[in-house]
Length: 55
Image (cartoon, rainbow, N blue to C red; front, top):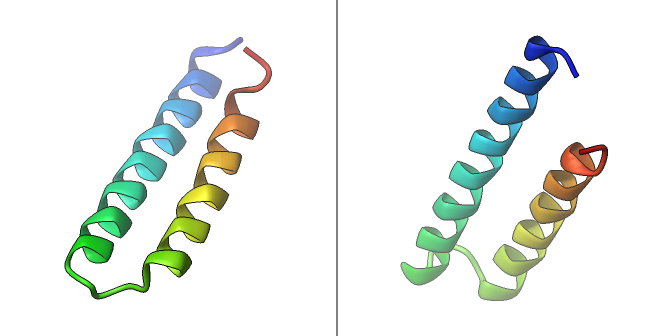
């Protein structure tokens, strides 16, 4: 796998992790409904797995 490909994957990983942490924080602050937030987090985790499934 090329370095550029790994860099993209690492960028996606970091962005997804950041998004999940922001969603979790908003759930904790009651800014986002817990059910909706959990659904979004689940979708992000699915994307994360698909990005890394070839490794």
